[in-house]
Structure formats: structure tokens, C-alpha cells
Amino acid sequence: MSDYDYDLIIIGSGPSGRSAAIQAGKLKRRVLVIDRKDRFGGVSVHTGTIPSKTLRETVLNLSGWRERSFYGRSYRVKDQIRADDLKARLHMTLDHEVDVLEHQFNRNHVETLNGLARFVGPHEVEVATDAGDATRLTAAKFLIATGTKTYRPDYVPFNGKTVVDGDDFLEMAEIPRSLCVIGAGVIGVEYATMFSALDVRVTLIEPRDTFLDFIDSRLIHDFTHQIRENGVDLRLGSAVEKIEDAGGHVEVTLANGRHVRAEMLLFAAGRMGATSALNLSAVGLETDHRNRINVDRKTYQTAVPHIYATGDVIGHPSLASTSLQQGRVAACHALETPTLPESPWYPYGIYSVPEISTCGMSEEELQERGIPYEVGVARFRETSRGHIMGLEHGMLKMLFSLKTRRVLGVQIVGEGATELIHIAQAVLNLKGTVDYFVQNTFNYPTLAEAYKIAGLDAFNRMPIPDEFKVRKTPAEKKAKKA
Image (cartoon, rainbow, N blue to C red; front, side, top):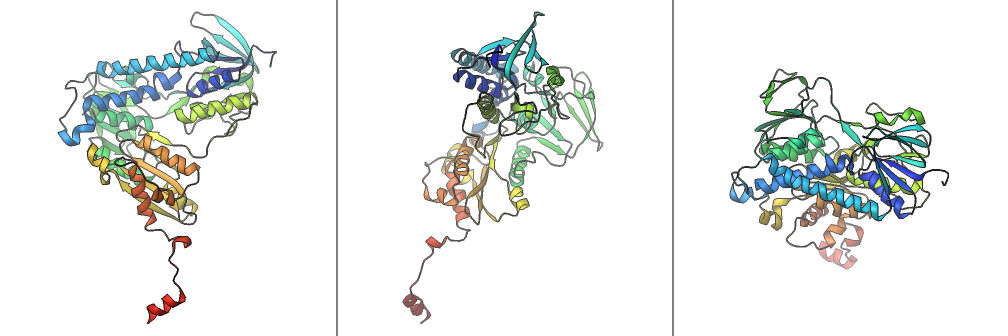
């Protein structure tokens, strides 16, 4: 690798680029991270994962959402919540994230460069800076971690103020009294539900008849009931025919003839791979219809062996958590260093209000595969901790194999779902059974106790294992007959 300027050049500094760079640094290799923005961290830090989750926490704190079951719906920590109140915590968090990232790069001797990178040859990139300079650099291996950008169709009259995408949304000058969200994907659902918690009148439009189809349908049914009860006007099967910027408001015409009027419209119907500026044709790489790159899911190599791709730019599952893992695995493979493979089961978290988190298979998947199973369910209101917290909703559902008694999937909706799911992840990956939840003691009172309740719920309806069956002697059987 000494014939090149670097052993590894990483394009993009989001979660996967970050973890790959740090891993390469720890392996004492020459590594360079190139990012088009002057502050590192990528979409995850600046417009995606960290901002949206910080915004959610701020909303729930200032609105007094978690205490309303005790003190009534009118309860608020701060009476007049303004956009600046939401942004204050947001900017503090982002500054801290960038500071930590830059410190990690420095500590691991990772070089960085700001500019727009494009391939000009199999092992060479050209980096154009804002100052108008262009630098050419070579590397033995490359990792593309450019992430995604918002999908902005021509029929949507974006103006950055009243008609916005997911990136513009965070820069709002004031909190709207009414909000229309188009697209009931993860981003749309998260923003729709958190602004409903601020008592903003929210209409969530989804052209399809269903939403979040990768989540267990029973969980979605419970979630739908909760968000509608919280004030979200959910309109499924409503194709958008026209969007009009009327100055003081936005008018949306649906194919079924209905109209939606709101002060602000958030268009959140998908994202595209940020690959158009990379000049991938120079290295013989192609993308799909959403500009994403196909890779080997074990090594993250592209069709060109010395070029790797990780994170959202390769598509599903498009999670910051999985991107971190992908970057580490890709860097190790690229630098010919053996490492532990990724675990088969990872948690999926949706930071809506309420939270959703899953790990493993859904009930629909088990039915499609013809796997005999049993279900265990616990409601948060059945736990003492749930009473203490004033939780009226929330559910934990577990699926177990009737043949092996192993945990096959866990789905949670409600407070703390994204934290609670890691118990399920551990048991799934360690091939644990329903017996684990019956045998083990959980802290009391905690929401985690719901695992015990759901485990017992399923255990009591499952066949009794042979080792636990009561064996009667011939004399006992004869005495019973007499």
C-alpha cells in the first residue's frame, strides 16, 4: 500500500465513515476522511439522527408530556414554547457531538479534508474545496459513506419556510399552529408525533393503505390507536394530487377529493443516495433507481473489490447503529484484519411518541415461514413501574418457537422501548428460550419487568417440557383409578 498517499480514503464522516476511520487509525494505517461540509459528522449529526432525537427529548421535557396523565393535558413545564427554545438544546448537543468526533479523529491520527470528492481513476480522487482549489489524492482502498439526501420531487413547491423537507424543518423560525406531513415513513412519523405532543394540529398523509410495514401489524395497530388518541389525523390511502403554496398557508389536494390546510408542510417521502457527485462511472460502479450502491453484505465490498460502501448509501436498514457496525467491518476487511462478524439480530428503533422498537421476526414473518409459535404479551399499565410513571399505554410482545422454545422476535411500543429492546437482542443472539424470562428475576419496580409478564403469559400456554412433567409410579396410577 506504500505506493499510494493513503491506505484508506473515506468519503463521508457520518456514523459508518466515522467508525471506519477510527478503526483504521487504531490499526495504525494512513487514513483520510473527506467531507463536503466544514463540520464533520454527516447527516446523522447535523440534520438526521442526533437533531431529531434531541428535538424529541426537548419537546417531551418542555411540554410536560410525561406528566400529563397525573396533572392533565393542559400541564406544561413552559407555557409559551418557541422555536428558539427547541433550537437552544439542539445546538448545544450538536456542538458537543462535533467536538467529540474531532477529538476522536485527532487521538487516532485520522487526517481530515473538507471538500467535494469525485473519482478520476480506480485509485484516485479529486477534491474540490470551497476556495476553488482542487487536490488529487490516491489510496489503496476507498470507502464510500456519503449517506443520503432528501427526495425533492418537482411537484412540491419547496420554499424553505412553509414547504420544507427534513433538513429545512429543523431551521423553522417559529412553531406552526398546524402541520401537514406527507410520508408516513420513519422520519414523517417521528416528526408528526413529536409535534402533536406540542399540541400542534398534525395531519399525517400516506398514499399507501398501510405504513411502517416492516413492523409487526399488532404493534402498528396499537401505535395507530395511540397517535390518533394523541391528536394525529392519520390519513392512509390518500394520494397527493396537488400542493399549493398559498402564502399564509399550504393547501394540499388529495386524490379522493379531500383538502388539507396547514401553516407548514413537511415533505418526508423518502431519501436518495448522495452519490451523484462522486463520478462513479470513472471506476465502473452503478447505482439503483434511488442512487444507492449494491454491496456484499458480509464485507461491504462493491462490484469493484478495492472500493467499499457502508451506511445509508447502501440502503436498508439505514440506521445509525448498523452503520457504525458496517464501517468497522468494512475497514477491517479492507485493511486485511480479521474481526468479529456482525450479530444476526439487531434492534430497530423509531423515536416517535410513543417509541417503537423491535428485534427479530414479526408475527407475519413467522406465518409466512410456517413456523409454529406462541405469543406472550405484557401491558406497561400492568407493571408497578408503569403505575408510578402514569403510563396508560405501552405494550411488549414476544414470539416463541413451539418446537425449540427459543425467542424468535420481540416488539415494543411505549415509553423506553428503544432502551428495553436490548434485553431481547441479547437473548435472541444467545439463542435463549422462554425459560430465561420465567427463571430470572427482574428489578422491581421497572418497565423491564414486562419481559417477565410476557414470558409467563406465553409459558403458561406452551406445552410443558418433558423434564418438568410429573411422572407417576404404577402404584399411584392404580390408586387413582381405585
